Image: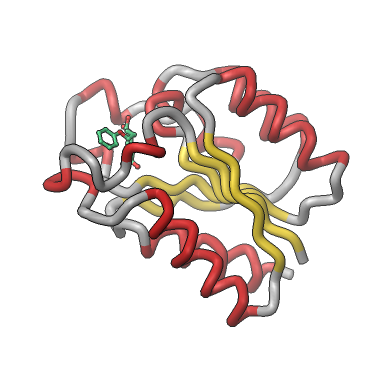
Length: 143
Ligand code: CA2
C-alpha cells in the first residue's frame, strides 16, 4: 500500500512562525512523524509540498498513474479557493483525506469554505500534526 501526503502553500514554514496556531514542530518533524507511523503500519508513504496550485494538480494526477492507493492532503490556503484541486481529486478517484492542523471553522469566516471537502472521504481538523497520522490510519483501515 502506498499513501501520498500532499501539503500546500507555506506548510514548509511550519514551526517557524505563528506557533500559537500551527505549533512548534517543523515540516521535517511532520514528515518524520508520518513516516514512523507508516513504518509501524507497514505501508509506503511519499511526501510532496508546493506553493504552486498547478504543481499540486500535477502531483494528484501523477498519483493516479503511479498506482498510489490513497492521498492525505492539506491544501492550506488553496482549501478555500481551488476548484482545480477539487476537480483533480474527483478526476483521479483516489480515496483522499483532507487534513488541517488548525480548525479553520474556528477562525476567519473565509476559512469556513472548503472546495475539496466534497471529494474527500473524511476531513480531520484541529488535531495538530496528529491529524496526519489519523488520516493515514483511516486510509489503511479502509483497505
Ligand atoms: O490549519 C491548517 O492546516 C491550514 O490548512 C493551514 C493554512 C491555512 O491557510 C488554512 O486556512 C488552514 C496555512 C498554511 C501554513 O501557513 C503558515 C503560516 C505561518 C507559519 C507557518 C505556516
